[in-house]
Amino acid sequence: MTEILRPKVLVIGGGPGGYVAAIRAGQLGLDTVLVETGRLGGTCLTRGCIPSKALIHAAGLYDEAVLASSQAGRFGIHLNQAPRLDFKETVAWKDGIVDRLSGGVGGLLRKARVRTVTGWAKFSDAKTCSVETAEGAVTIRPEHVILATGSTAVELPFLPLGGRVISSTEALSLDEVPATLAVVGGGYIGLELGIAYAKLGSKVTIVEALDRILPLYDTALTGPVSRWLERHGVSVHLGAKALGQDEDGLLIETAGGESRLTIPAERILVTVGRQPLTEGWGLEQMALEREGRFVKVDDRCATSTTNVWAIGDLVGEPMLAHKASAQGEMVAEIIAGHRRRFDPAAIAAVCFTEPEIVSVGLTPDQSPDNVETIVGQFPFQANGRALSMQAGDDGGFVRVLARKSDHRILGIQAVGRHCSELAGQFATLMEMGAVLEDVAGIIHVHPTLGEAVHESALKALGHAIHI
Ligand code: FAD
Ligand code: NAD
Image 1 (tube, rainbow, N blue to C red):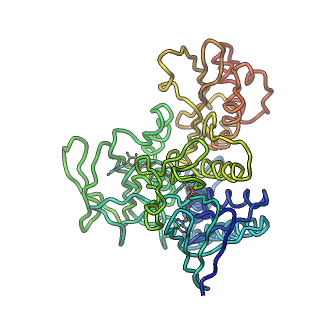
Image 2: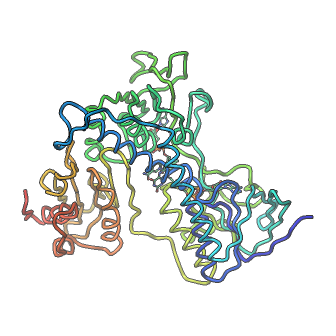
Image 3: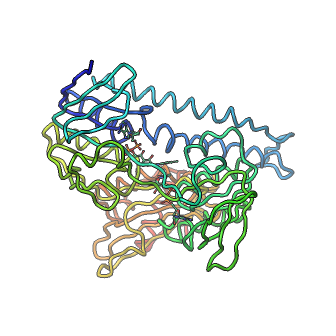
């Protein structure tokens, strides 16, 4: 027999968009059902942000241990023997973190009195959803629908996933570290995971179609990452095309079609972007307008169909977990009667490469033509804390962009080890409409990387102390 539910709110997808929307709706007293086909936490918790950062952390520790066991040692630390990596244990440790977080999300949903239905949701019209669960069929007829189906990896037709060709999902759960790894796509995932595997001992080659890595960031910010790759023997082919695979590895055409070569590859990791998950759940039955590949929404995340809302990776760039969560929280509040709009001053982005990059707002090359701006850049090499943590290696810095007329901060970026933790401060400055004098007037703790933020504002004002 089919169970019929009539909640106020139905959320599809238990990623950082959907589960946050459901918890907030529950907190606000709305009768809420969440449908998730896989594990709670979605891409982010189970095969994205969290497991990748766990792997990156473990890879960093291993790399340091390898250095400490070399002839030169590390900061006077000498290990008498090379460290031994049991990668299965590393992956199991990572899985433990995922289990803990996914279980935690389940607990939070229960606490907020959200009912979770496990199975694949399918709509026959905008307000009728069927789910086949292990316990039987469930039909859900809600008043409001929040779609948070997320995204999937883009595949290349000439390199279909399977065998040695893998996506980030498989790359996060390999049995062993591949001796050789070819990465197609030098964006976020390709570089984060490519660098992690290089630290774990793979010979990594990155193949990027454009003429630079991480095209989302300017070359000043990516320069330190390029230098790290060069110093650590990671080969990078820019302007190159992947063509397919042969027995030995990945077949590519180098820049300008100059030559064809095979990159030896035990594994080929394809990371050429992600696409919204718009198929297989009845989008066509819901009369939803599209904007390119994405579901079209307005500044309240309302779709073209009344009381159908959409959030997260499904609705567009940036495809970031914190944007998905912010939209989820907002939509729940709108349904509960609050007046809200999605209008952030800026959404911070961090790339967890070596070194890390953090960026909020405009970069100098994005300054509007009709606005005079000033830039203050301060090198981590001149910051004590940075030196003690090697944040200034390879040329890291903090850079602030401000309007010349009133010193209003338009954007702020940094590149350096551990600088991802500055993202919160950067976002706060942007969201609060700070001017350079605000930053200059704040006493920053010594010794911290934050002092470099202070100095970048002083530099823009013409009176940096430590350079
Ligand atoms: P998702 O997290 O994709 O969740 C969607 C959920 O919906 C999935 O669990 C899916 O199973 C479920 N679903 C879909 N359709 C149905 C259906 N019909 N019925 C039932 N369930 C359904 N972002 C960051 O901000 N920081 C990072 O460091 C970061 N690292 C990343 C690393 C990797 C390797 C990857 C792949 C992504 C990373 N991201 C990162 C991006 C981030 O994971 C996404 O932006 C985020 O997960 C989007 O959240 P979402 O809720 O929109 O969708
Ligand atoms: P991406 O868009 O960051 O990078 C894809 C790269 O592949 C680009 O540089 C592109 O030029 C290149 N490319 C495309 N087609 C190619 C081809 N045929 N051959 C060679 N190169 C090609 O995509 P991604 O790395 O797959 O990550 C997807 C999304 O996940 C990101 O855009 C981001 O939103 C999210 N993400 C975020 C983080 C983070 O916040 N730290 C980490 C990982 C992923």
